[in-house]
Every structure is written in C-alpha cells, then in structure tokens.
Length: 212
Picture 1 (tube, helix red, strand yellow):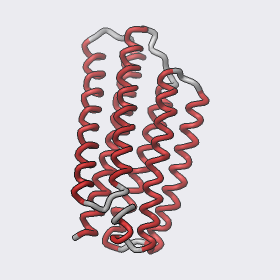
Picture 2 (spheres, rainbow, N blue to C red):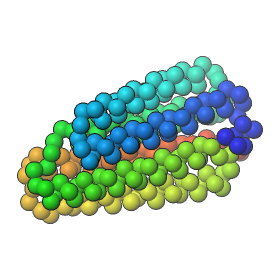
Picture 3 (cartoon, one colour):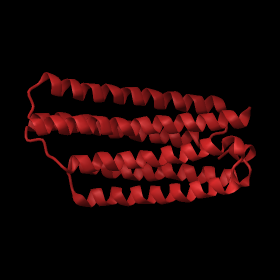
Picture 4 (cartoon, rainbow, N blue to C red):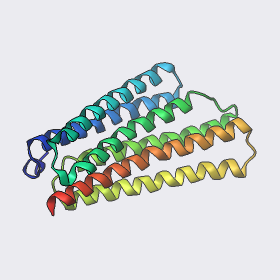
C-alpha cells in the first residue's frame, strides 16, 4: 500500500489491505451483472449472490477485528463505516441484478434503450471501483483527493442516467409493470455509484484524520 504502511500500525494496515480486497469482490460481481443484463440467467444471479455473501462475511470479520481494539480510537468509527459502505457496493449490485431477473420489458425498442443505459451504469461502476481501489492503495492525500473527484464525476454521470430513465417513463406511454421496473432499476443502479462515492468519502476522512 505504499505510504500506508508508515501511517498505520500493524493491525490497521492489515485491515486496510482486507478492505481493499472488498473492491475486488465488487469488480467480480459487476462482471456478472453485465452478463445478466445482456442475457438474464439464474447462473449469473447465483454467482453475484455468492460474491454478495463473500462480501458480507468479509465485512463481518473486519468489523469484529476493528471493534476488538486493533484500530486507533480516533478512526475506529470511520473504519466501521467504511467497511459497511464497501459491503453495500456489492449488496447494491446484487439488488440490481435481482430486479433485472424479475421482468422483461415487452417492447423491444424500450428494452434495448434501457439495456444500453444500464450497461453504461456498469461501466461507470467499473471506473468508480477502480478509482476506489487506487485510493485505498495510496498514502498521498493529493492523489486520494484526485481519485475522489473522479468517483464524484462518475456518480454525477449516473445521476444523469437515472434522471434520463425517469424522464422517459413519465414522458412516454409505458405499461404499469414497465413503469415500475424502470423506476426500480434506475434507483438501484444509482445506489451502486452512491455507495462507491460514500466509501471514497469515508476513506478520505480516515486519511485526513490520520495525517493531521
């Protein structure tokens, strides 16, 4: 982790390594999310569920280690919040995947438009998770802030996708089930990027606390 090993004690450094590993779980889950968007299949959903359970287990283990006294008191609560937010990234990927598997839009043109937007969401997630992983490998506050700004930009792009989907269903005549479906996936896709941004905020808060 570069300079991080000089900023944390042994227990904190190990926990930060493990938190960084949660970003890798999110990447794997996001790949399966892309698969399920292109071709809904229970196999992909089961894989995402497996990654979601792996993330839950990792979060539970890390929270126990943090609470046991392995972390300095001045960053303990922020560390716990960071673990929870990192876990929420995979949870929100699973929630979107599960929603996608529940319904197929009957209108092919509408379905193609929605699929394109949600695949764009997954590409934004890829970028945000990559930037988060880079943040968590850096001990340079300037670089951490740069990664944070990129994640913020990606989250705003996702806001535009969400707003575009919601505008569409209010502007055009779609059936009730399609209306509800698009509403749900628009918000659930946005949740993933929100959790990436929240994780970045919490990590930056921890690094600022340590460096000052």
